[in-house]
Image 1 (cartoon, rainbow, N blue to C red):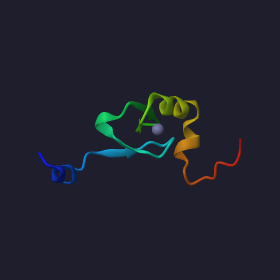
Image 2 (image 1 turned 60 degrees about the horizontal axis):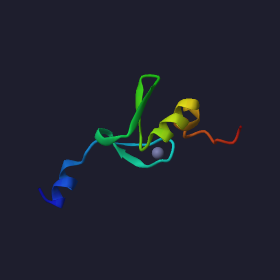
Image 3 (image 1 turned 90 degrees about the vertical axis):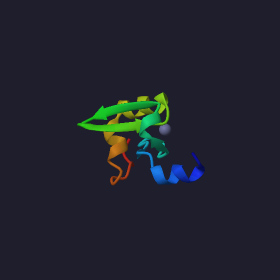
Image 4 (image 1 turned 180 degrees about the vertical axis):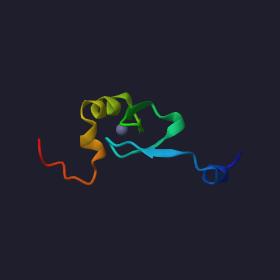
Amino acid sequence: MGILDIFRKKPATAVDPVCHMTVEKESARATSEYEGETYYFCAPGCKHTFDEDPPKFIGADKPAVEM
Ligand SMILES: [Zn+2]
C-alpha cells in the first residue's frame, strides 16, 4: 500500500533496446520477438525502429559505426 512496497515488489523490468529506458514488462507499450527473445519497448515507435533492424540494437557490444 505504501511506497516501500514498490521497492519490495520489484516489478520485472527490461531495458528498451532502442532508447535504453527501463520498461516494466507488465506495462510495456509494445513488445517484439526476435530469435526467441522478447524485447520490451516504451512506445510503439521504438518497436518499429527495432523491427527494422534488430541486430543493430541487440548487438550492444559492437560499435554501431557502419551504415
Ligand atoms: Zn523506447
